[in-house]
Length: 136
Length: 186
Image (cartoon, rainbow over all chains, first blue to last red; front, side, top):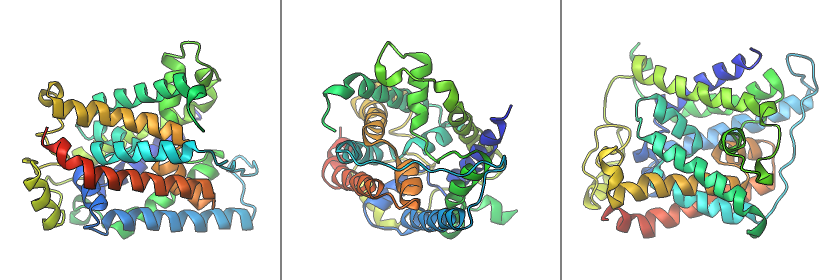
């Protein structure tokens, strides 16, 4: 039951994704063709709010609701960030959706996106299978 | 009510998305990231003795609740908070896509590409199946997606996340400008 709060957080996030048309294939096409500010405005302002929030959390030593100290693990660089990043980018421009919007599309009635999601799960699985043989 | 059913502008949606970062940290010390859920689904359903999927995914089950919430939020937004209208994209993008072979501009996705009927055509297969595969393979290889790297990682000033985000964009530009026109004509 303690996980219900994350369901609720996801629900609000899902509503924003749909209402701002982030889940629209057309919006992603516009973004990659540099013909609209919409997506850049969303991602940019989300990052700015995120940066400010993390600064405030660290500066004032804000705790979680259960009183734990907040710890954010560092991201360590590996070449997968580059190779995988490029591969994801190629896919993102085709499907017009990154993983969050895939879930939101399914909820908003595009059941065919289930196929895209299953294929993404398969892609993740194949990565796991080949991981040790891939350059990182 | 009109304000709600209209599409929300970037300056409302962006900050709200940014607030997911502190919200998850404060409610449970969780870092925002969605593509991990795909790994947890693999670990839960088809681990197949692969070391990458041998971990206690149940400890990460919050992430699965989060993505289930996204599905539910998508449903609520589409059923109760939206008026049906076309996505008002730049007329130039509209014209260009039309020229490249997109016909249906009525919904959030072009139904002449994304539908069960199209799944068995080469174009539909490439857009849904190959596209999805690249998203799942690429995000895990990169160690995160738009949420985990571009938003969470950069919010925490992690330079590897900035590198990954630049690569996401580079991949997207290469596809859109040089490959997609051919794929749309398949």
